[in-house]
Image (tube, rainbow, N blue to C red; front, side, top):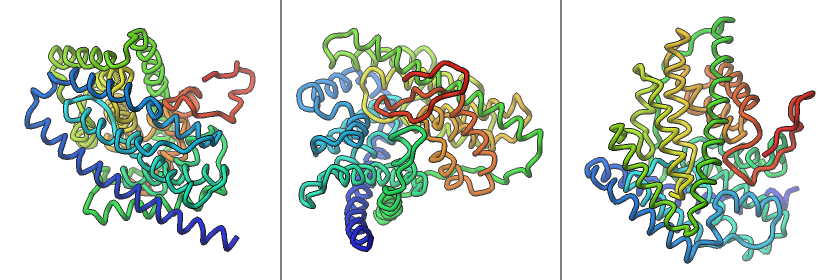
Length: 403
């Protein structure tokens, strides 16, 4: 055990240094791309061209890494060959490019892929066995997730929970936790600050509020399920275009038409300002609906990035609208939607519960626990990660839910 602790402390430190540094570079680049796009909104009209360039480079040089997060999950489930190093720089470059020209994508996928691919480069020098490679990849995923969102505890559990629904590997908890904590500190060392949200005071517990939270969690789960279904359906439609680099071209054209028709510039990119608005002012249902449409079109057509921050946008704005319907605290329901839609779409309720407490404070924990579990239960076992496996049998007496 002493040898295990020494070995994995050293490996975790190295993983944290690489993943934290990569996330810092990514967040700085992403902030520059976002600010530049906001100053030059006409860049949106070049989105199809950027999509073709991205698709063509991946078609020529990146077929081995195009599966992204699912490639990492597959290697953890069945370790075969080292993840190509080019995964990291390619996903960083083309995610920044997507944001520069206005694609509605996130950032979690990029950080996870950078963390996992960089971590796996240590497997050969340290002559790690297949089982040890699994731990290393899980630590890289945790470090990438934690450093990009500033949530080390959620990142640690995410690296365990995202693999198999209903099962956690306690053996991997130590490297995942240490990598997450240190990677987040490395990111701060570079002067990168994470986004904060104004939750305010959490109301005291009451039966009526508990019922409203549970009802909200149910709706969050249904919306998470809708997100996954739309992603799968749009992906099937875009796959009918035989030449892969043309798929993001059509996706980009659709986004331009939607944006011009609906005045939808606020639904491009991450949408952090709108997420922050959802905590302090009343918003309509169109905010979450349009972000859902923009994001599924962009991701299904092949633009690089992630799903999580758009899911935060969808959830927080939906929670804002539900709070008005239920006559409930606005900021509380925005926070619950923030984590609950993601919990349902990723089948990661424990990670999202910890994220809620890290971002909004421990008093929100009891409400977040109810909301994320309701969302997870009604969202189904299909999720945004196709290679995620399940150890759950589903509800007794009901047909087995399929991926």
